[in-house]
Image 1 (tube, rainbow, N blue to C red):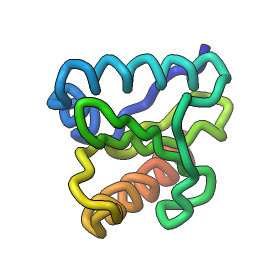
Image 2: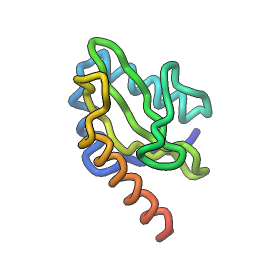
Image 3: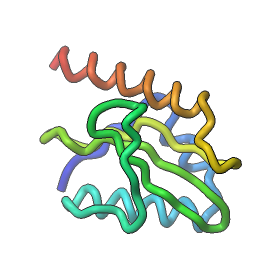
Image 4: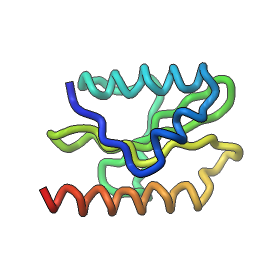
Length: 109
């Protein structure tokens, strides 16, 4: 099972999801840890190579952005509630910044 690495503040944001969305996010991240795909996902190329988002639709829209292409584990880059059809630029910017930080930390290992 792959280890999960959390970007700064991301785990706290996920804990702020409503209970049903939090449980669904946990189940889907577990699937990724086991080498499976989440039930509902899409690539999110604007964040960086290999970035994916878990899509949660209940009780309303939530997203968890992650990268699972590295052998040491899964990097959870951002978690947020989506309130409009298009992903807000600020959420893309947060995930992209965390992607860059993840790359820096990997290079230092």
